[in-house]
Image 1 (cartoon, rainbow, N blue to C red):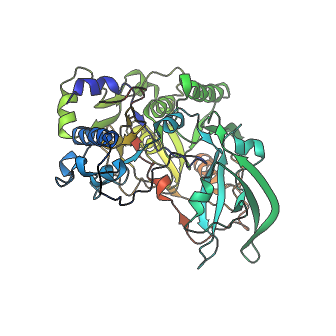
Image 2: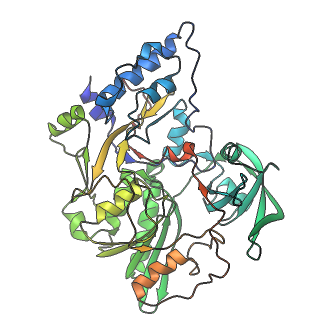
Image 3: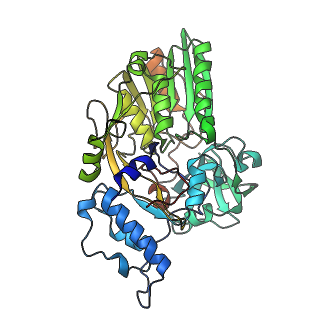
Length: 471
């Protein structure tokens, strides 16, 4: 075991819920039982040994790996990885044989349609599934084709999705979506007759979806919608955060609302950058602890012996755009996960954090993205984190201070005061009730669907950003 090489190999810690927007090509493969007969190719054995060695050294629950697992007897590396997981606790570790696509995703340049979906059963008792667009990235294929937040997708290439094929249809590289409308009178969906052609291409997925300053009474309220914590190539997306905070300062904001309703996570660098922009200036100046991290006994012992404690205590970084707030408001749903929860939990010891919306996802653990020369990449859970007050293990998520359901029919444009979740946060700030249009608001469908291929990527990731294969 070469812990020194491990320490050098992970210079940047990332907390990512890798949520692929309109891209299915590098989703975790379906794991099936393989024919174990015949000789196993040498290349497979090399990958298997790589999986075996890394899991036993770095996996958080390495002492729980079944002793019956033999990497020399597995013909499918993905199946080997699955057999090594401690499923009593681990719901998030995964593996892919497409590191190159994942790397593009982590850098914010995915090959993607560029829209975030929410899937619901169309009617009670029906297996048909509708897709509601939660948001669209600017300058993405979806944006350029005219798809908008709140659009209802009824068909893909003329096919009505059901609960068995909906994710496969959504994950295609190109398709025509048929849009629909909802009638509040009989609570039914019908075709609008409009269709949109979509083709996945590479684009810069800037996570700053929307920002503005709302002047209400004597309050200047900064509102930011942030989709995921991605620094971008050459930190271009961190610059976007700085631009937002500078704009807030120029407009003398008195309060800030950060919308993380659809944010499944991202890089620690980006998360800490946002946290240090919002935190009291004293916490940033003093380099106070944002989060603490613990590992398996092997890694824990190693990191405790190092002079640099950054793998045990991650501190607020300096930030020239710090707003020096004493209170901040977050909009959340059950899709608010990992790095989003890290920012919320990490700020709580230092300021008044008010959550409006729904209980968050509950991802308090982290993974390393470890890749090797054959384009495989595994993301095993290697740590769990706590805030400066040792708050961790929020397995059921973090509950909001003010519960408000996030209606998606209709899904108002970001910043529209008819949005009940945003309106409720503003009411907390101003103390004045806002009038919203609730007459036609419904909970779409009967039940929301959360595809495993999408949900499995909602975890804390500490990736190896090197292009070299890991040992």
